[in-house]
Image (cartoon, rainbow, N blue to C red; front, side, top):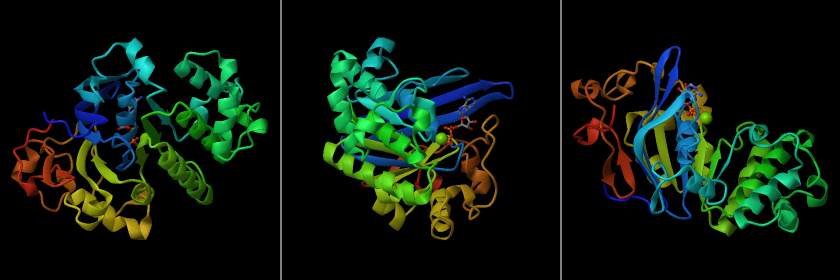
Length: 328
Ligand SMILES: Nc1ncnc2c1ncn2[C@@H]1O[C@H](COP(=O)(O)OP(=O)(O)O)[C@@H](O)[C@H]1O
Ligand SMILES: [Mg+2]
């Protein structure tokens, strides 16, 4: 298959979770790609597979989950094929990740300074001690009083400070790709705006590519060059932010965008009737067909593949001509 992004190119990615309820078919053939230095937003309702996609990039899917199949090219390597030891080199130095809940990734018994120094020491193959000047510089860059914050422990930080620390830790190794999974969703609105502004400025200076995950179309539209819309484990539409807003093609995207000005959050979406399918027994064919106003017989048979409709614009929907077979 032709390469679509020179930094990251994920195709046909399938992930399942083996649970007592049955097999959750969480990712059903995700397609996602990025160029160097680009910002891609991934949006969709809760449970559609955004975090699983993000974790898959770092191969961080744990029991009871499993990456079943797919191709995950990062530059010239398929991250699904390489050894765990080679992957460790990439994690945290070439690709780093910040999460919604800083406390799930900060170690409660280590000082902030030590934790960031550790990440840098690992990348630069030096002693941890040697990295403290670089850590201080990084903490200042994210707007914190380095001298004070360096010796603090995670529980002493406010939500906004903790997220700044996460950004410092994520960007310190100068990763080619920063994955930010709902980095501001747990913060109140004014702090959210400050953090996004900070991230915007730092990333612009450092030139990192950012995969920004959010259930908030507003956040993604403001921050990203391109947007991928996910629905129930599938990529359903990909376009530049401008094209997606001006000319959305997929019926689901249209519904999302109609909901935005009034409500803002996809969570509260009522513009599309019906509910997200259960991923243990999803409907055959297009997983959106039961809610779709344009449903035809073919939509119930096979999942449509992701096809290009114009430059930088792809959609998985039979309305735009499709052979089907895009994973099920
Ligand atoms: N550890 C887990 N165990 C079982 N199911 C999981 C686990 N993590 C994720 N899932 C399932 O995978 C699907 C996608 O989850 P996720 O990627 O977290 O959604 P979101 O888009 O909200 O980030 C969900 O339906 C969820 O039930
Ligand atoms: Mg999530």
